[in-house]
Image 1 (cartoon, rainbow, N blue to C red):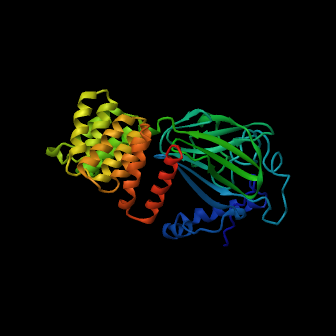
Image 2: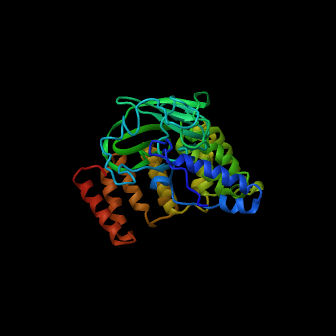
Image 3: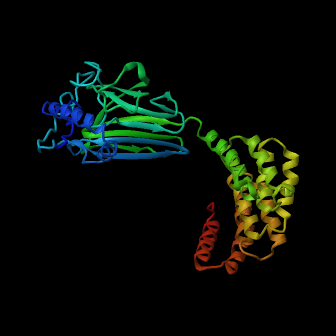
Length: 398
């Protein structure tokens, strides 16, 4: 006996010729209950997707959050080749609730946002969709299309076939979204745009229409800090590098500064695998300052600048950071300390030129820039210094 598959329309209702096949399949299944191994073999057989609607999966990272949409993708052209452009919305895909002619949702069936099995939306952390909270989990994704505004449904039931067994009582969230004109898409496609560390827009595109859904992660920095806390209890916490990296994240992103200070202190604690060097001491000093421990910060910064691991490039880059933060006087002090500790080393004179220029000491800046020329390590740096000299001599800022 040849097993005939249950055939489904693009809308999701079983086609009439499929009903005898259902009866036949039930009969075959009853027979196979007696011969278990044979049943297991037949159950594992996989054929092409119904209607040629290929399964697709897209995953988007939003910082540490992973959002995945797993769906089957119908086409504008039917399996028989009919061009259904202009006949999708409000026809093949009805507006509002519909009767799919199968299942138990009666005339209260939404659209599954795809074809065949359930379209499944998964997030590994809580997110906000269109400004409303959606807890972590997997959800059946359904839609109530309309001309001006759609309703998007996230159902706690993500395992049923399509929308045939949809029940409103299983809704986890409903949000509103507005459709818009789009470039033509033959295949229904989900994709993401506007991708940031705490935000992305999920887009459903099919035919000449798109439906954007705003997804935000309100506590992205908290998630990173919490994850670092966990990671530091494993191999990343075995050396000072992991502790300093985590501390620097807090400093750079101005978040969890008290925790960052604790991690920075751990990074210099020799008794616990830490190491006091220019990098760790600099991070510690900056976090002490960020936590209003000004006196401690000054002492630690002095230790960092005089540490044997602090080379001329380290001091130069540190002073450049101070310049970027508009701490001109402090930057000049570091540039001058660098010249004292590493006379004539690259890029000592260039640093002094930058520091003096920022402090309005243009004549001294020109002198230092000219002294920097013969110490430049390559042609690119020499051209850069020459350009700085020209700007300074013309009275321009650098």
